[in-house]
Amino acid sequence: MKLFHFIKSKFDAGLSAYEPPQEDPALSKKMGSDLMERVITIRQMFSDSGDLLIREVTISGVKCAVCMCEGMVNTNVFSKMFAQPLTNLTLEQATPQKLLEWVRSQSLLAPDQKEFYTYGEFFRFIMSGFVVILIEQLDMGIAMGIQGFAGRGVDEPATEVNVRGSREGFIEMLRPNMALLRRRIKSPHLIFELFPIGTKSKTDVMLVYMDDVVSPELLREIRYRLSKVKIDVVLETGYLQPFLDSKPVSLFSGVGTTERPDTLCAKIAEGRVGVMLDGTPFALVVPYLFTENFQSFDDYSHRPYFATFIRWLKYTAFLFSVLLPGLYVAIASFHPELFPSSLLFSLVISEENTPFPLMLEAFIIFFIFEMMREAGLRLPRPVGHAVGIVGALVIGDAAVTAGIIGAPMVMVVALTAISSFVVPSLYEPVTFLRFAFILIGGIFGIFGITLGLCAVFVNLCAINPLGVPTTTPATPFSSYAMRDVLFRWGWRTLQKEDLRVQDLKGSNLHMRGGEKDEN
Image 1 (cartoon, one colour):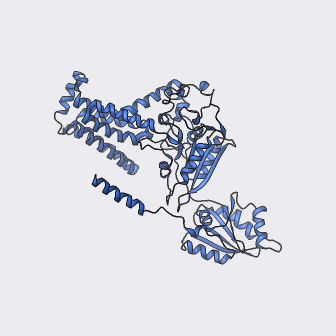
Image 2: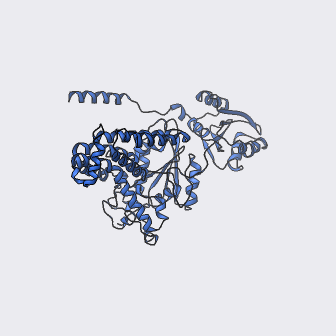
Image 3: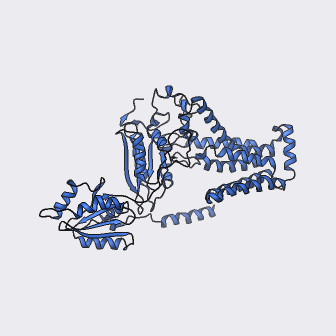
């Protein structure tokens, strides 16, 4: 106990010494009216970086400064829509105020035009691809959206391949992703809420929702949790996922991810909120139910009977990938009488020449499999295929021939590996649970696996992401909502009533579309 308290005191001392990232006070400083002073301050704060471009020009007799970041602006659009109109501009009795009024109301230099007053806003705009014009004697700046930085074109998503439906997936740039959603839902109720996150990166994060169906309580809670993010740099939605997830600590998450615009549109139409981040094609879906891991967009394009078959196939594959190795180790070690006599005889012949116990053998071969998977994932594609060939030759043939690994264990590993790829969104918890059940099965047998499975179910039922139980509609049970869980009913039935996430049993979200729910 003394050792535990000593370690805890050291850990708490380290936490108390940590200071969360603070906002630079210089960024909140307001700009002055002297143009030269502003230019000097900007160069000093930017440490005269090589990508900062500042050009001092005279427009119709008024001194101005045009600022941008190199490589972030479309040069063709800049020269035709911005530079030429300003350089050819002639105003009678020109003053800074007249030039500002011309830019405000008599020109269309850029579709996206904003005004700002602080240095922090200035840096955020030019680092987002805006061109900023500073006018003498005015304590403000005007930002013009003329973005032109390089980016990947819209392509098929790599992680969510489908047979029918759209081949478009999200990309790293936020504005094209907004257009992909707007094309699919042409409704004024589709809202995009944009704000920066990250004390230094100022990364654009966007909330997507339908304001006539989303629960205001859900929206308010998501805004509150995101406001608590105090990270210097936010580069991926995985940085935000822990803040949106809920207790207790679990292997499973109440926040989903998707690369498909059509999938996100379907989710927000049910009252969910999408969270998108500039710089990543993966969007978060909040809240996310456990049963949705076994659904795909193809389910709603295929005939109901085939979609139901595929869904049951996924449930079976999930149970296989989690329980099969542990059950094999438990039955072979403690309950061999459960095997048929012919299978038991083959198992004994195969395992009597292997040098390792069955549990250790399973650990070794699954650890090697995870190493091969990671190597094939990280290596360049032309080399990655060689990893599979080497793994098949070394483990599938040489290891069995040399008597290091038994042939039945290789078959169990192969079947488990294939099953784990059927539901890719659950690969992380499946991998951990697989090793856990091998250990439990090797020590406590099939009774330990039963208790471990009960513990997993209890933990899963305790997850309540943002007020919606992740196991609903299975528990709490809702017969009507189950029409799209174990079975996929036809669209003639699904069209009769739109199901909202706040209407599910067990939900604590009592508001619907801004009004109290009558139910």
